[in-house]
Each structure stands twice: as structure tokens, then as C-alpha cells.
Image 1 (cartoon, rainbow, N blue to C red):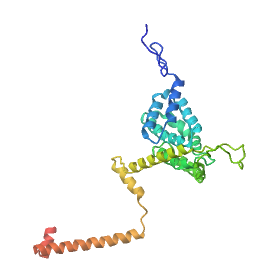
Image 2 (cartoon, one colour):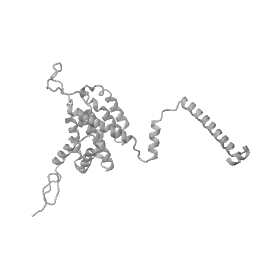
Image 3 (cartoon, one colour):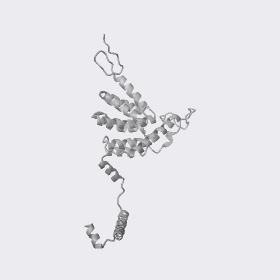
Image 4 (cartoon, one colour):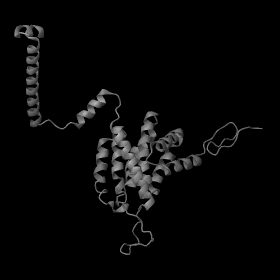
Length: 270
């Protein structure tokens, strides 16, 4: 009599273990739906996607479906998850996830920030993730610049963050054939405020984090410097004069203190 128990994920029947794609997809969908501003759920979902990398195309399609079906809060969370997934896929040498995301990045952005303006509040988050993907060499700079130009027309309508009508009535001035807007209810708006606060806190903390590589610190300081102008040269000359005067006074002080002649002082310096 076999002692193996049936597992809905692995579909164990005897000694051979078969993965149940439907169960893997359902569990991955649940993880995507429960993402938040915290890093841990995103990392857990990314680990899960790489654990079942043989189903990468199916799980990638699952990401696209959830981006199109969920509210704007969850779409922003999935956008941040995508950055974790690509970073982890690079580390574990599984490029298909990266290639599929490169292929469908425009579809992803259109889902998180729709052209109709309903995702105006997500624009800054999309830009943050795109810059992160560019830094990780997942996206080309030209691609990010092209998408960023398109986003400028989608961030000017904050009215879509308004609360839904509690009485459920519709605006008679709007045609009934218009596509319903994905507005957030009061609970979702409060959740979004908390998540944005958490992300901003983590962003401020990461600004001080350094890799330990002196070259990285040098590059960061170089990028933050403004171009040198005439005022900088004037200030440098003034500081040089001040330092020379300070050194002269320093020398005079010790010469008087120890009663040192000029000739002896020059010999001491040599």
C-alpha cells in the first residue's frame, strides 16, 4: 500500500510528482491580489514565480490579467512587484520573465495608468518602477523616455481619486455607453494613503543606503553636483586667499610663541 498522500499543487500519484498548473496559477493569483506596500509579500510572490519557472508564460499572463482586473491600488502594488520579479529573475539567471516583461511593458503601463486618466495617482509610482528597471538594465533608456513622455498626458486628472457616490446614482450628463471608471471607495483611498506613506518612508531610508562601493558613492555625488560657473571660480579664489591668510597668521603665532627667527623657521620647514 502506497504511503504517498495526494497534493493539489504537486498532484502526487505514486512516486511521480506532477505539477498542477491550475493550482499554481490560482495560488499565484491570490498572492498578487494580496500585495501591499510592504516588500515581503512582493518578494514572496517573486520567489513563487521563480519556483515554478517552468510555467513562466502562464504566470506572466496571470500578472497581465490581474493588472487589468483589479483596482488601481492593487495595480500599483503589482507594478512594484514586477521590479522585484525582474531583479530576482536576473539573479537566478532566468531571463524569460525579463524578456516577457520587456515585450509587454507598454501593456503593463496602460493597465496601471490607463489613457482615460483613471490611474493619474499611479503615475509617480510607474515612473519610480521604470527608473528602477532602467537602472537594472531591464529597460532601455529610450524606452523609459518614450513611456515617460506619454505619462505626462495622464497625470493631470486627479479627479478620478474621488469617492464613489454612496447612493449609487449615476450622472445623467454622461452617456450610458461610456466605459465605467475604476474609482476608489473610501476604504480603498484610506488604504492607498497608508501604502503611499509606507513607500515614501522606505524611499527616504533607501536614499541613505550605499552599496559600499566607493565608485557608486562618487557617481552619486557627481550626479548631484550642479555645473561649474563663474561664481564657483570666484568663491574658490576667495577661499584660497582666506586659507593663505590663515596659514600666515598661524606661522606668526608660533614664531612669536617660541621666539623662532625667520631663518630657523625656514630650516624647520625644509
